[in-house]
Length: 265
Ligand SMILES: [Zn+2]
Image 1 (cartoon, rainbow, N blue to C red):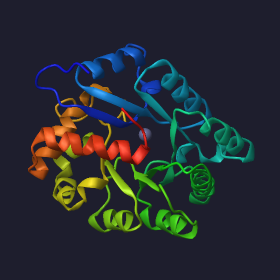
Image 2: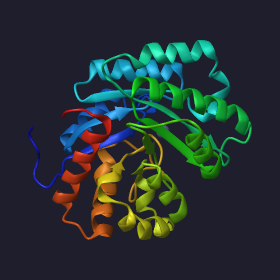
Image 3: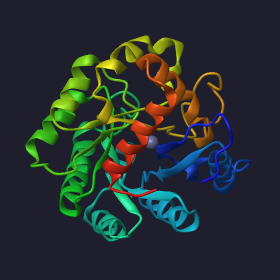
Image 4: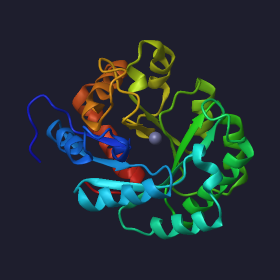
């Protein structure tokens, strides 16, 4: 693959190309990222419609994979019919994960935790059934989320806490249960010193990187529309914080990504 000088290869493990604004079509964002060294991305479903859109993007663009799931903010939509639809969608060969699902007590107080939890359980069961990793969203809800995960017999490929911003104890809670942690542009924020202090403690082979675009653009683009082409900003900060040579760290994260999703690129 051609690579312009100075770029490091990277992979965006959590993108929402379908949510980019009209002035930045998915194809354009994808091409720009590839020209900066992107090896691929996983587009994340947040409801049935966006799960289908994620699969459509994976069919249209060469280095795109998809996940299917219903975000906790949409958890009331997770009825038996929806679960059957997700199951059907999850059989598509480009689907490499289930979610995003999870619990959120910070941003969506209007969705009761019990409703979110019921949706989460359906996702956990589907992930187990399909032997696919879970994409977990967690805000201010690690204890109840761990309780659900512990009560479901989850072995094999488990999952990732995407856009991790929890405490040291919460990080270990995830790692001890076999989960992975994914870091977003938040790692570059001035306010995220605690996260940067924590990063060196995370086993290198359980780290993933993501944009969560169009949200959470890294410094110096904070507040703007995020896109996969901006992931190298986060990669550079992570390598610096870890005291690692950027090329070597980039290769570590790519190897992690291949292992986590069981994909070749
Ligand atoms: Zn997301």
